[in-house]
Image (cartoon, rainbow, N blue to C red; front, side):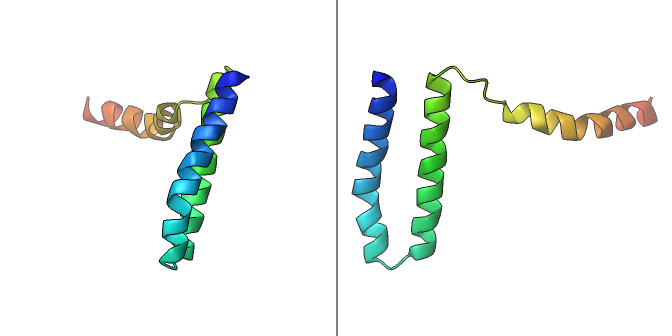
Length: 77
């Protein structure tokens, strides 16, 4: 509980520090990307802290490339 509150406080501090600079420059697109990435990172950090099973990106890459690897290995034998 306290760790989650700390994560949210740190994320809020980052937002308060960086958002005015992005908005002052008129970079709405960059601000939107910044906000989405910060929200994603905060959510992921809280999920990891709550010990939710977060999928590993390498598993997805392996799932996509495994058939190609198998085919290449069979072809080159």
